Length: 202
Image: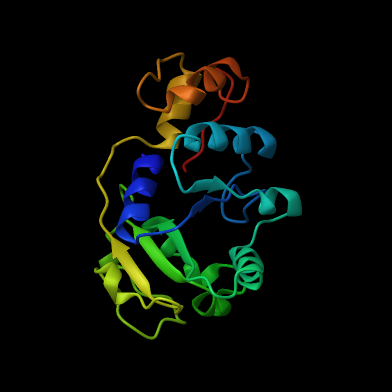
């Protein structure tokens, strides 16, 4: 589901590049069961046939808690002329004001919010405190070179979640066609989501 959404984001925003950035650790989620190096490899395998898709491992190399404000600040210093978009689900967007250095987020990038099953649609959520405008629905409303815009982007809903895949693996179920074939065998052969695995929400 995440990959299909990423493809649609890439096309809707006419991006030159879309980066997947695996986190080292999050203050808002349980620790990942699979090590960072393994998760990075899975992402590389899953995206290797998708032009314009890359894996950025800076948060894994940095270690400790991963903070979006730090990551975006680094990227902006490296590419000062680029228009940056941070893509997230409506569940994460609802708690954006609780993020580290939340007041700086609007100065660093535009924000693209995707609907998540079981959560209100992005348009029904309150914008973060730093927002100065309405939540947009048309990608053309986000200024090239600007920051702080919020776009509620509709993508094809696919009822496949990472937590459901982990649960299926843990119970011995098959995951054919639920994940990219390039990583299916690695998910099944590894010890990260086996019968003793405790699954957590995405």
